[in-house]
Length: 177
Length: 177
DNA sequence: CCGGGCATGTAACGCGTTACATGATTCG
DNA sequence: CGAATCATGTAACGCGTTACATGCCCGG
Image (cartoon, rainbow over all chains, first blue to last red; front, side, top):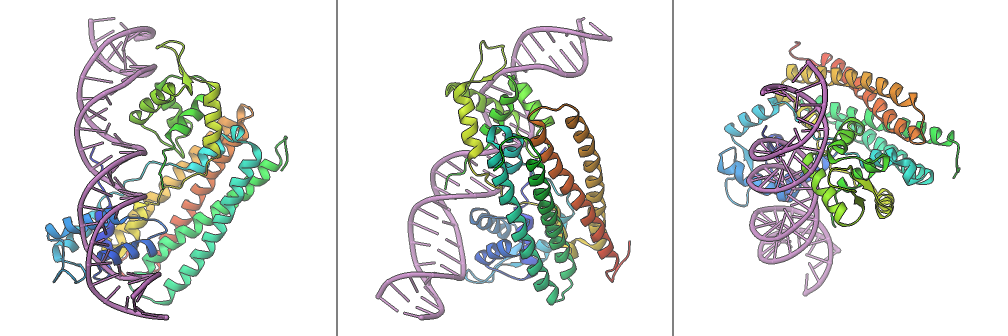
């Protein structure tokens, strides 16, 4: 089974919004998709070069931003229609908590505090982001809000879980912090 | 900044429960940590070989299961104490929904249905798992329950989000399915 | 005796990150 | 004029997956 990169999809998607330089593509992915996607320079530039060679993107001249061609537009739709391949799970926090007895109860509490604070900060971020996105209504806005909503739900779940878990550790016999 | 693998940690952690062959380590990771961690054969065997060379694990003879040495025990605690490095986010579902206008409303609905069903199935799985783990009380049980609880919270959040989102798409002007 | 599970590895490959190198432009 | 930002790339490396190769042992 071939494992295919989804970098191409992310780059084409970014360019479908508006023409951009490679640098701007990276910024767009970091700032707009950053909550659920990431790409590094070392991926973006070679991908753009390959896309240009295949005629999916074009630059009027070397200084101009890349823009989607008709074939690139088609390619984007094809890639979007492919099933999303899930990355294998790798949650370092869970790995540590699972072996929490080896790590010690106090350290586990610290990890959970950290997780709670992270979730709170993220939730605030999403709330601000939602306001910013909702302000300007484009045909794309409803879909962007879907992904923000997912972030909010996830952050709230993480928050509740961390607090449940801190309570559960408190109820545990043994050294209290 | 060095990016360090956490495979070593997962393998040492598995062996901290009981001595195991490489094959059993893989099964344990798949069946017990599977909800938040994954390793493949191609990682496990070389890691075991390296750990053996460093004296962190030992095999009485070539057919026997690996067991932790005192130094391996120490190594495990050191690795557990290191901060969990988060893998960069890569959520193919969100990527597709974000560009949902290009993909089409009907296809988005299909993705969300799929997500809802997945979340429901997972939730049921966690409930069963919780019962199984809670049945046998060991000092490790409370920590295992923490990770199961995280799974439950996450699955419930995904479920609620998918249903919210389906409703939001229904409210959208445009082609209804 | 044969199929399936147990068991141990290795080789090849692709993906992705990090670090390095370089230059233009802009702004204080 | 010097620092920061914009901009484009390349090289090296590590991680992880997949596929391949091999053999043992046990139950039907």
